[in-house]
Each structure stands twice: as structure tokens, then as C-alpha cells.
Length: 458
Image 1 (cartoon, rainbow, N blue to C red):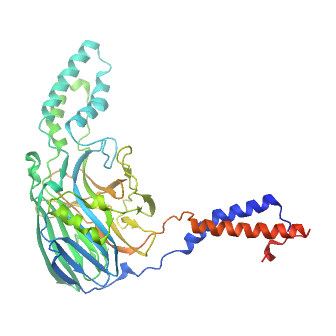
Image 2: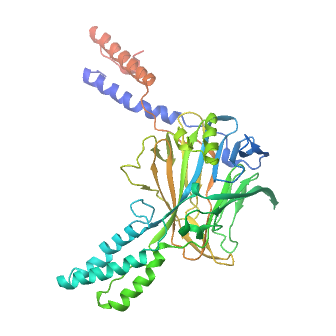
Image 3: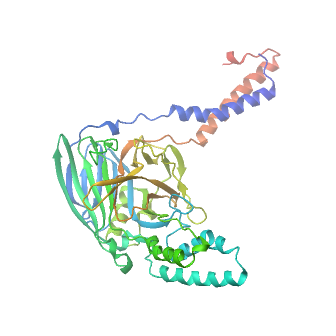
């Protein structure tokens, strides 16, 4: 087959474009079967570096504050401590769901946002057809009544770092061939007066498993279950007796129905949710002191400022986190499936190494009544945004009224996800060299006025 100059360039271009994909496909990791481990011995250090409670297994090392002052988990692959994975609990945020079913910082459940949204979407459209003077009079009357009921709302954001926490445990639990270490973080003191209802009503109940296990939270609903591998930490995020800002609107809605029934202003109830804000970061072993400073309320450095996280894999979608997107972008929605056996996984992405940390959660949460019985299962959504070398993750729960919410994320280690490979200088040199070799071979043959068979070019 004769090769013309344009064909040479085309062949070189094809090689240039396809080789990175070939190299990427060839670099599939063959990690240890981290998620198939059945049993692990655990060594305990209850005062590591004077700050941390430490679990050490042949697979994973996990630390958390021994004082329980702030809920935070750090873990790494025991055979390689070059990367420390961090999950830090920032707080909870009450948000509005009139427009979106997941957390978006444009819609906090504060008085100004609630007032603006109700006015724009439900009140003004009903007033628009009225005579001008009557419209102005009703608008002012309704506004004053609404402001009265909105005046007593609490802040939609409860920052965990401003609060006090207590740690109970850890203690070893063994039953039915299952073994795990149990410990709880409990929110005990909230300095903001209007948020003090949260005291002793928020818990992070943890189980670090020595053995693999399948858990069914409620035996009467066996279809809702999950499997936990040895070396994974399962934590139940539990919220009781939450006082919802949107519930304060009930009297206002009743007043509208009684005094202005002809307007037919219908405001959907319970269009709100509660988001658990988690920061995911990765640091070096030498930077654990920054996390210790946070626990001691010394904020010269934080885990986020020391983080060197490059990217995350969110349900197998690669997402760079090096840039800070929080100034000019809004949160992205995680595509969470409602099928109960599926899980949403957020995994730390790495260019080097074949083991990485992950956080995952099932797409449903359980609602409990005062006696602890299950009354319903609700769908869980999520959103996220890059925040500059770390990821902000918001796990979102719909309005659950006076019930207790219980949801159960997991952290652990798994095979590292594949990373999209860029053309590095070394790879580029190889590609250019290959192109030159092909071009030179063809040029030499052309000078000899011979037909070129590319298969036989050596």
C-alpha cells in the first residue's frame, strides 16, 4: 500500500490520539481484594500522639479524636501511609426544596429566602389580577403577617465545630459470628440559643468491623440491608426532635385560608430538607498535626488548608477538586438511584498506587417513631462541589417531621479508580519519536522510488 504525506500525518495523529487511551486501559489496577476481606485482627492504641484513638489492622489504620471533641475520621492503607484520607463532619443545613430536591446553597431555610420564595412563586401570582389599590393593600398586609411568623426562625446552619461532643466507647461487640468495635459521638452542647434543641439529639453511631457482616436494620423489612466488609467503618447519622423552620409557616398558611380564601394561595407543606455537610480531604502523615490543632480549637491550620486531594470519583465519574468552585458555581447533584441495593460511592482518585479511600451510602434512610419502630423509608439525595484541594459533600434528607432519622454511610479502602491520563512529556516524546521513525522510513523508501508496505517497515 502506498503511503502519501497526508496519510503519514493522519497515521501519526491517530497514534497520538489513541495511545493515551491504550496506555490508560493497560494500567488497570490489580489491587488487593480490600472489600472481600472476611476477618481482620485489630490492635488498639487509645492515646496515639496524645490525641487520637487508633485502630490498626493488616489492611487499614483508622484514627479519630479520643476526646470526642469533634467528629472526624482519618484512615490509610497500613502498608502505605503516604496518603491519609479524611472525612470531617462540618454540620447540618436546613434547606428549601421548592425548586430542587437536593441541597443548593441558593436556598437556605432562612427567613429572607423563605419570604422571597413564597412571595415570588405563590403569593404574587395570585395578587397579579387584582385592582392596583387592592393589590397593594393585600400585599402589605400579607407581608407583615409573614414577617411576624418568620421572625422567630433559627439559623439554617448548625456548625459542628462550634459545639461540644462526647465520645462513648469504643467497646468490642461479638454476636452471631460478627465482631465489631462500637463507639458513639453525641452532640452535647450548642452555644446558639435557637439551635439548642439539637443538644443530645444528634449522634454519629459507629461500628468498626473485625469481620464481614450483612446488616438488616429492621428484620420486618429484610429487603433493606447492606453488607460491610472487615476493616470498614459503618456510621449511623441519627437526628431526633429537629425543629423545622418551615413548620413555623403553618399558622401563616391557616391565616391565609381563613382571611383570604378567595385568593386560593396554596403553599405546599414540608418543602424542606436537612443536609449533612461533610468535607473530604487527603493529607500527608506529617500534616496530622493540623487535624490535631482543629480538635484542640487551634485554627492556624485546618485539614482543608493542608489537603493535597486532586480529584474524586463520584459513582465512577471523575471530578477534579483542585480548583475552588464555591465562589462562582453551585453544587452538582449526585445521580442517586432509588433502588435500595445500589450505593452511591465517592472515592478518592489517585494517579499513583492501587488502593484508595472511599465514602459510600445507601440511597435510603430510615424513619423511627418514639418507640424505635420503623415507620417509613425515605429517598436520600446528594450534591457536591470542589472547594480547592478538597470536596464538599452534602448528603440530603427530606423533611422527616417529628420522627428520628437514621442513615448509614460507610468509609473504607478499595481499588483505586482509573484516572483519565493526560499526555505527559515522556509519553509525548515517545509519540513524537514514533512519528519521526515512521516518517523517516517512508521518506527513505520514497527516495528509492519503492512502494511502501507499512507492515514491513522495521
